[in-house]
Image 1: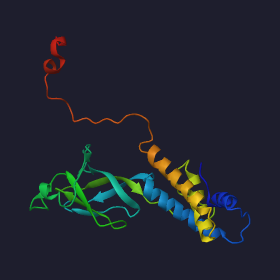
Image 2: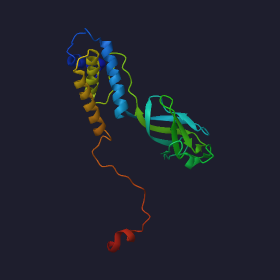
Image 3: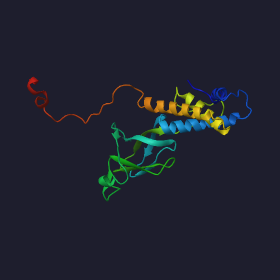
Image 4: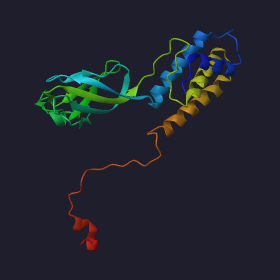
Length: 229
């Protein structure tokens, strides 16, 4: 369910016991709601998206989309006619990349195998190795920053089901400005909701995770023992 700024302001005004603007204006509360969404998305990494970055042949460095604050996974997908493969890239730190490129950082190949990151959002740069000699796209899986609401009809950009976190955050900001000691209760309520989101939204499933290293090279008789026929 999408919660608009107007609805969220009503909820906050109920919590601060000021149904009609007197001390806190609607604009001020809206600012706190936007701050709440930004803080929540930054600390829980719950706003996930997948964006594409165009890759040109023989170009090594690319800017990550400006709304991405952290990268989870990168894939290289050639766009040449007849190409059907998608190549997952391994992340390596800048120093660790020396193990891959040695002294030849611009070594060319059909597709990259690794990537590293440098800079910071909104100017976070991805550096590929080897340098692809064909065009394609990078599928960038990452965590985006929330989008500030402008109009009161805009939705607050927070994870569905956790809208209360924005209410409590805005409440704590208002009460702290008023030197009302209840701000600490609101702040703690916000932190509790944030902690719950961090603990329960990892993969949106309760199924166990698995990892495979590929097909085993052992022959069947070596692993099946006397039961193998």
